[in-house]
Amino acid sequence: MHTLGRISTLRLLISIIIMGSVDISLPVLVDTKAVLSCSPILLTNVIITTWEIFLGDKPPCIRTQRRDTNRISKTNCTDKRMTWLNRPDQIPALQIDPVAITHEGHYRCIVAAHDGNFFYEYQLQVLVAPEVTLFQSENRTAVCKAVAGRPAARISWTPGGDCVPAYEYWSNGTVTVQSTCHWADGNVSIVSCSVFHETGNWSRSIELNPGVRTLAFPVSHLLIILYLKSSIFLVILIIVGIIYFQRINDCRLKML
Ligand SMILES: *[C@@H]1O[C@H](CO)[C@@H](O)[C@H](O)[C@H]1NC(C)=O
Ligand SMILES: *[C@@H]1O[C@H](CO)[C@@H](O)[C@H](O)[C@H]1NC(C)=O
Ligand SMILES: *[C@@H]1O[C@H](CO)[C@@H](O)[C@H](O)[C@H]1NC(C)=O
Ligand SMILES: *[C@@H]1O[C@H](CO)[C@@H](O)[C@H](O)[C@H]1NC(C)=O
Ligand SMILES: *[C@@H]1O[C@H](CO)[C@@H](O)[C@H](O)[C@H]1NC(C)=O
Image (tube, rainbow, N blue to C red; front, top):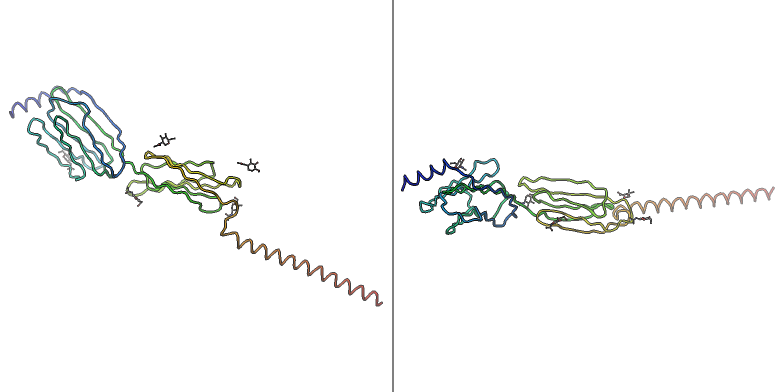
């Protein structure tokens, strides 16, 4: 048995025929369950199945399973969220539950069969939906935010304004995208912000203040009114004064 196994492995190594290689980009939502199947086709004569998992700059974790020796498997993968789905007559699939941002990386399954090798590769991309908010910050200026999304969301406005974008990168790998816009044109009243993201699209609308900001309004207004009132009062005082002095002069002239 042992020798036979060795011979077949040797034969396989000598006559490696790459049957196929598939590279799949797999986007998955954070906190959900992901199942990575090794191959959609049923392979007979499978000798060894190997999963190689490359996450960030950490050394890869590897799991191998021999078909011919009662499915004995060896692994140095320690992540409890990763489990193996063994199904009869199928190559074991990898299950990740729940998916975290740290699971983003490269997953390679190598199937060694009597008639060749088969590579199946996944590029796992972890998506996080942003939280969308829209509010008015000051005088005819609105702020649209897509908080802690992955990858970065894209923001656009209708109608277009005078906009300034800002990005904030979090240590957990998410990004907050913010767009602050100003509309000087007084007849723009309702503005909408659209957020485009891999996890979905959102749209929010807000009505802009028609004129000057309410908080700044009363103080300046009061000052203007006070100023105008005192000016009018001064003018009246001067006129009254002029009239009074003219009358006195008239009286003096009459007396003379
Ligand atoms: C797992 O084993 C492989 C090969 O035996 C080694 O290259 C790798 O560094 C190991 N990974 C960890 C996380 O220990
Ligand atoms: C990432 O970090 C940000 C800021 O601390 C937090 O708001 C967000 O919920 C985190 N997201 C995930 C998926 O951990
Ligand atoms: C409000 O916007 C108008 C028009 O752009 C500008 O003239 C005015 O100075 C702004 N006021 C404040 C308080 O920012
Ligand atoms: C804004 O108002 C002016 C004058 O009433 C008008 O000519 C202009 O077309 C308006 N702009 C928009 C975008 O409605
Ligand atoms: C979001 O909008 C883009 C561009 O209009 C579109 O291609 C995409 O399918 C939309 N995504 C979703 C989830 O609706």
